[in-house]
Length: 232
Image 1 (tube, helix red, strand yellow):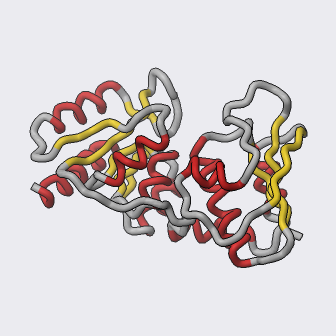
Image 2 (cartoon, one colour; image 1 turned 45 degrees about the vertical axis):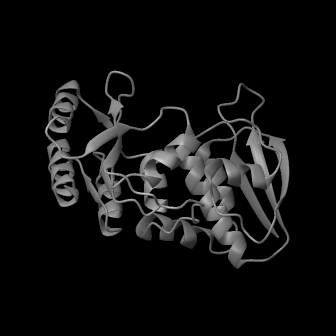
């Protein structure tokens, strides 16, 4: 029996996107009886409890699979890593997760590309989210200055509107973003992606997928300029 665990509390939106993608990939290959546990800890939730697989799929704009999975909400003490480890107990689940990380092998997104003469962006501010993905004020000013001279328009993604961001990405020539949810979504949508992070492993993974990632933000800006010139 396939037993899948999905966090309602822990992990960012990108973590949930990747985990559900691997769960769908796994279930499509292993047609055993399956159950999806939506795991909470009875505290205030950061992700709305969902009572069926279809509503999760619709939220993330994944293509509808040919199968369904029984869903049960459970409460238990856990961390994000705990749930990944429990999912790894399913046959070859870890191999499929590696395929996602190494090859960008996400579950398909239900969307049609409708490119406009623009790119989209989302950069995390060091004053708000101090992390390996954040961009300094100096670098942000360099980005804004570059936008003023580019031949195509840059449009910021929404902070809290997943559906709108799917629409914006579908219209984009490419994305510039701090590594995270939106670089996962853009790669799943086959939108050329320029990502920023100081984590060497993430740099390697994104670059080997045919996208661009650097720990040097100026290199990311140079790539933006190069791509903008191609579309001018």
